[in-house]
Amino acid sequence: MVVNSVRALADRYVNFAWYQARGQSDAHEELAARIGHDPEFCAHLARCLPDGEKQQPNLLLAAVRYLDGPYAEHGPRGDAAYRGWREWTLRHWDEVSTVIMRRRTQTNEPARCAALLPLLARLPQPLALLEVGASAGLCLYPDRYRYRYDERPEFGAPDSAAVLRCRTGSGTPVPDRVPAIAWRAGIDLNPLDPAAPDDVRWLEALIWPGATDERLRSQRAAREAVRSAPRPRMVRGDLIDTLPALAAEAPPGATLVVFHTSVLAYLPLERREEFARLVRSVLQERDRLGHGPGHWVSNEHHPVLPWIVPPRLVHPLPTTERLLTLALDERPVALTGQHGQSVQWL
Image (cartoon, rainbow, N blue to C red):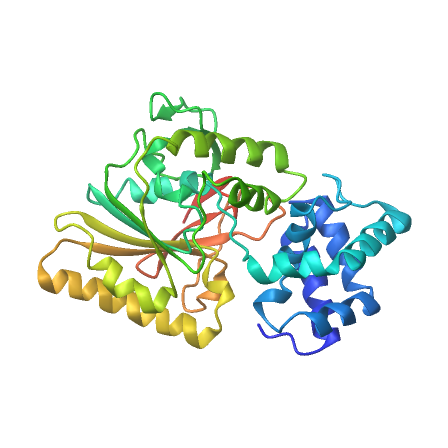
């Protein structure tokens, strides 16, 4: 979405507070709502930041936290606290804007592997994983973590300290083992290194306050779990420009899985449609060459890929968040929590 007016930018913050942060982070909800009702500050943002991606609420909030701004884990409370946050942000605007222009919203939630696992486990093994919008690549290691679905027995990599917990809805095919991975690769405009202190600091700044303790523990445990593993093949570049050549590197005989979570929302609709055509073409070419099966696994909010329409759940899990639609080759199979905390089979 291109923000071309102060009013539209203010609406963007209010919508972020209401539809994304609500029920997930009281701190982000309150701060984003206050920004959205502060026309002078919104005018500053509209004047100083380019339209589109760099005006994302997530990016500003993470930049202030990255710089150790006055952002307590529970966020500003009351008018005085908001004024303090606002004054600090304006006083340090050169630093804040530098972070915003240099960085991207690259949340890397290893817990999303728990929401993907029931689907990945059903595909022909071994898998060749190719993640679009891979960030630091932590979701390319579903075989390096342990899993706990509801009150079922824990399973997974025997020596891993990363335990990913997930609630399930009725009928969800919970696996009892991790998938076999033959190859892993990722695409990102700015790949992050999970061993680089500055990149780690940014990854942690992106974790929403409120759910911070559990998500921070999961991310740190995941980084430790993959520390000694070979790094996946990470390619810097545009997802459409780089996908065909990278997909062609996937080993024959493995099931190629092109997957992404909460990535395509950052593209305009025409680019999303172009990406969909490209993925279909890449998978058809792999099949034509006899290199093995290939699948597209998308995990996005429904409006992002509007032709993938999930049916209404009869007995949904109680939640206040907007759920993602998990789809296999454009067919909806589940609704998932945006941070991997739940999966409900359709």
